Image 1 (cartoon, rainbow, N blue to C red):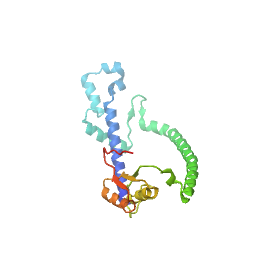
Image 2: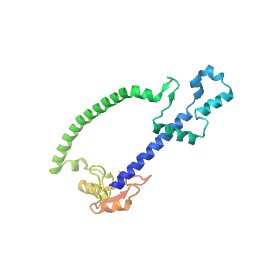
Image 3: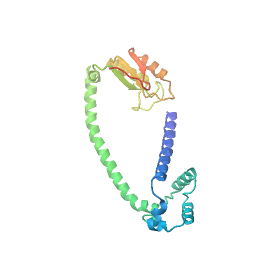
Image 4: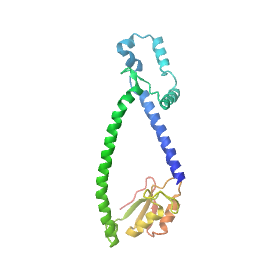
Length: 223
């Protein structure tokens, strides 16, 4: 469980770094000269090459891209978001002034989302209760899967470990579903690289005696 959480945190950190790199690169490759944005087209033409070079150096735009990225991340961590040349004010001041309104709109949107999900979840809960009741009488999920030739089921967790509830299946649980619904073929997928696919197949084989395989890139299945 703790290893799983640490892996998730590490992947989240990598995602944040990756997004920051993409944003930085996009900002640097967009067409347009920052000096034109500051001085205007007419003012830019009046600058000498030496003046242009000096201004670019003062802005840190003449440094190599890795150095620029390092300074950019440092400024963000320190809360220094720079200065808007278009509005002639600090970006931090703009965020402070407009942030409360943006937060209010986000809160309203999130509240509407929660209300919508509650309503939809209520209908889904009623449907699930009816299905569970029918399943107890020999119908329900078993009837829904009648005639299914192949079941593709994820098996991200290992049986017997301290796995979070209602998140992923184990190989054994996938096998139990296939056995209960009498599906002739079961294909296990979403097996993380730190788990051996053979282990997930072995778990499923303990409770399922049908055609059992693990999904692989490029594989095709006739149904």
